[in-house]
Amino acid sequence: MIRVPNGCLNDLSGTYVHALNPSFNYLAADDGGTLFMVLERTHGDAGISKPDSNPISVSLSRTANGFVGQARAMVYVAGGRSCSVDFPTELVKCEPGGLLLKSAVGGAVNDESCQPSQARDHSVMAEHRLIRTSTPVPASSLDAGLDSCE
Image: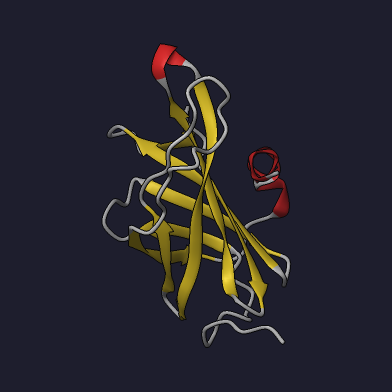
């Protein structure tokens, strides 16, 4: 049995902006089981939206344990090496006007192997309210970002 918040079984495809930072635009595609989101940031006064140099993606699945998954971002470790890190993420509320996500605010990686540190603590979570701006997003818009979710 799938257990997700009310309204979260609906198609959540579309575009969203972060309530506290509207330069963060999320392109979302929902296949009914998994919600994929790719972050695009609006840069400068021109309002140009383009993939960020540090790609961030979110992959959440509807499960018996909730609407859960991870956000993936690049972190930079000593020596300038970049590592892909997953941050536990959960969709906690679906509203007609948007979504409420909760995600870990930090994670540690081993500088040499880029593997998650055994000492990492994902217990500190932050809420992120995303406001829906349009629906739906063509799947082709997310093709480049889906590679970073794998």
